[in-house]
Length: 144
Image 1: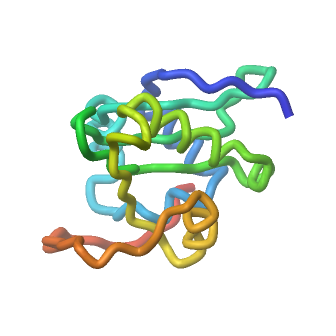
Image 2 (image 1 turned 90 degrees about the vertical axis):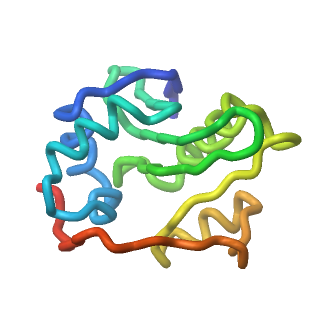
Image 3 (image 1 turned 30 degrees about the horizontal axis):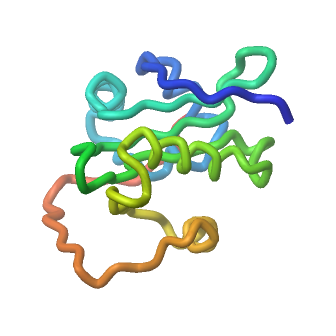
């Protein structure tokens, strides 16, 4: 499959439309969804977009980094029809490279259980040194 990956800022509407074609949208809470997505797409440190030969968005990867030590993958999604074609792996590798590379940058993410095998194939492991402060209102829903 032919595709390109570029650093690109999406609009909230573009990202929401993309989420409808992925399983990634279930990671967001219903509370102030559109408002918070707009903040996300405008403020994430690194925004990578994979597009097919027809310029359709087929994958997205967002990360927050200090470019010195840490990278947190906030979002990684591929449209359902393109899952398993290496796009997610390519996005994560590019994100890690832009953040500073594997020799300097430790990469973290939060994943649902279905995504664990993907991240393990990338060489990631479950850390035992992460803390969370989770007091946000969070009602699950599906982006439609």
